[in-house]
Amino acid sequence: MPTIETIGVIGAGTMGHSIALDFALHGFDVRLYDIAEEPLARAAAHTADALQLMVEEDFVAADQVEPILSRIRATTDLAAAVADRDYVIEAAPEQLAMKHELLRRLDGFMRPTAILASNTSSLPLAAMAQALSPARRTRFIINHWFNPGHLIPLVEFSHFGETSDEVYAEVAALYRRIGKQTIDVLKDVAGLVANRIQVALAREVFSLVERGVASPEDIDKAMKFGPAFRNATTGPVAVADFGGLDIWSAISDNILKDMDNSTKANPLLRAKAQEGNLGVKTGRGFFDYPPETIAETKRQFLRRLIHQLKASAFYV
Image (tube, rainbow, N blue to C red; front, side):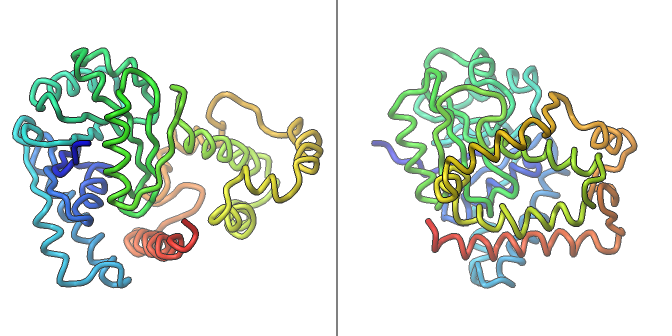
């Protein structure tokens, strides 16, 4: 089976630069593309900050920072970014027309043997693949990462469509080399698996806030020190087995009829978005984030993820 050694990442935004960093952390030669120098410069600054935090947390040795950074080469030339790459993952905005144009160009620039992947979680594989040649469709796969990509272990694979078994095996071997936990999504459903679970949870969370059942602070506390505490080491299906499926069946009958079953975003969530209260990036969401605290708030979030990633190795 061929071995993937060189990586191209298309899009240097939130996900793209983090994906590039994770491959570089594990010794891969990476080319990172964006349409202009400005997003590439931002990506370089974010990458340096992320590595500095990992050094502070004894997750990366200080003398490895420069070698890691040197393995990421930025470019605004799309052809140069992918022409000699074994594996290319696009992390462009979730717009089908934009994806079509980008995928068509990538198909033309990449080697016939190279594998093309998309980081999408919301666009159907078949719809995106329409932009590709028949040969490339057998070497095209969804690999959905989670933010921040260099710290969250999960990657979801599309195990459907025209992709060959050989390609699945090659890509799975690649992700094992960088320590990822992967799952095979067997049907093309919107949101794949993890985002569907996350959105189902969020629907009830926002409903509880809207109904005034508990404060946002207490709802977060209920999750962190209740279900999420347990789910950090044990998945929800196994939790049900431990609790007893007869108990879970009875509880479901009692509670589900009173739970939110809406098919649109919660009105409170939509109102906050329309008001421009978008969370950390605007300084206000369900909580307030004074400008002078935002940088440290983000760093503390990442520190917790680093600690969790260290601990999670015990449970794999």
